[in-house]
Image 1 (cartoon, rainbow, N blue to C red):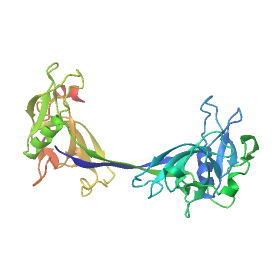
Image 2 (spheres, rainbow, N blue to C red):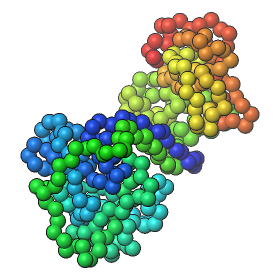
Image 3 (spheres, rainbow, N blue to C red):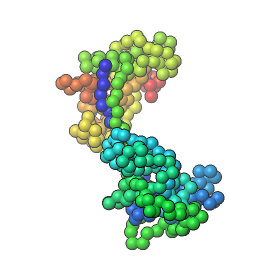
Image 4 (cartoon, rainbow, N blue to C red):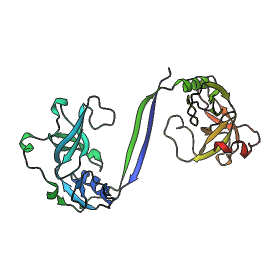
Length: 323
């Protein structure tokens, strides 16, 4: 059985409105802000619109850095990028003065040291940048402080959202990453084995007779299992394409200079277009209907790119259903 590690990773950049900007600026300044709704509830983390009425919210308030665990789950094996490198608890904490709970990590010696209702406080990160990670984690509150009277939502102080002498946080970059091991099924394993022999195979649906490449083991239109193998290509037709102007960070395309073209290619005999890079032609001369063929690198399991065959362009009617 084929197995391979797979990583899906990208940076997500977003700007912030006045509420989120104030919240993250506050974390950088060791202050937790919430927002008050029309019915008096305090939401932490704050949102810009009331989840019940959809009314715009702007009434910021400051809540305490202490709170109560409402529920929790033990994490025995922390993963890369999580708040703590040692086993910890994921907790929902209702901060004093808030009506909703904040999700974060609790540094505890073991699951026996965590319970619903326990009192905790924020442990601030040594270096803060205006992100949720400015809260390094929560930690159990000292017994002497645990009996202190909790702050009620009606007792929280109003806050302007402004912090004198410091610039506001007006945007964030979240690095999304998913690591997993991919195991292709029967159909894709046969497809990958065929590619290692410089052949491209698909599977034909017994109902609609369409040939799908790469094969999926079932027809996405009819919902029936597919088993009949069909060799397609190796030549094909460019159906649609885009010009890439941002240099890739992935190893497979890191050495490719921009601009370059990535295209959907309908291989001869296939009823589904696959995507691949186009080379061997100036990027501004690639066009719909261009006839192309694969170019293989030594030892590669798949084509490095596709290049023009020199044939006349395909007629639009021959590939319009594959756009």
